[in-house]
Amino acid sequence: MIKNLDKSFKVQGIIGLIMVAVFATQSQAMGAGYGFFIGIMNVIMLSFTFRKANQRAEDDAKAGILILYMSAVIRFILLAVLFVLGLQVFGFEAMPVVLTFVVMQIGQVFNLKGKQRLTD
Image (cartoon, rainbow, N blue to C red; front, side):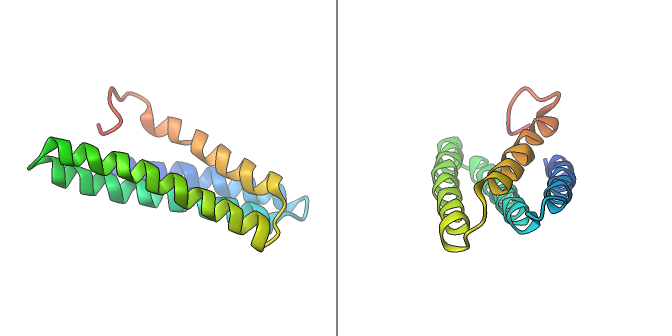
């Protein structure tokens, strides 16, 4: 699983950097960089919780599943807070922030290729 997460970091990192470069041509690199930051934070939290859920599932499968559910809720709230901070407090344009994040998350599909379950 750790090997797949490394691949996920690489794929999403490359996609994010490409998006930052594209938006840099339109003088919106800071907003795209913030979207890149949000995307990487999401992947880091996801990898941390998968690792923790796998460790916990060895003793109690229900506890491992509960960690994954709670992780989804926490990540949703964190992402909402980060988007609000970026768009309202820091004043970034919405398009580069959101588009960079969304395209990076679409890159997660490359990590799922050939898997039957998310935790494979």
